Image 1 (tube, rainbow, N blue to C red):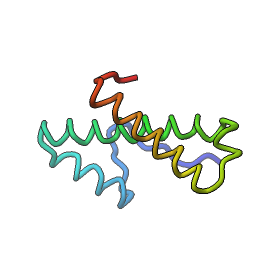
Image 2: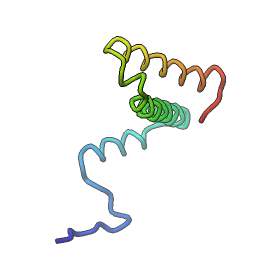
Image 3: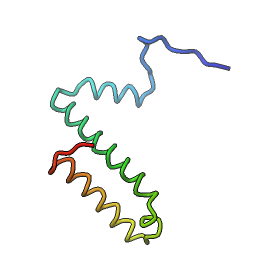
Image 4: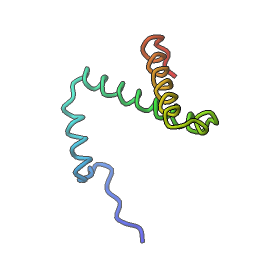
Length: 88
């Protein structure tokens, strides 16, 4: 059975959604751009890590090797995004 759909102008009353909406509404322009940049960085690192996990050198590495590969990948992403200013 399909549940009731909300109207487009009706907002969710989920406590986590309300908290996030209130937080976002209280951000200024600078804080909003910083928050968006942090989210983009997290998304880029997560995307790269998902690709890394499929590689054979990561699969065959031990715990320390996996940790080192992940840290190297994170450092490379940050270097590309902030030192070279190459967003991808």
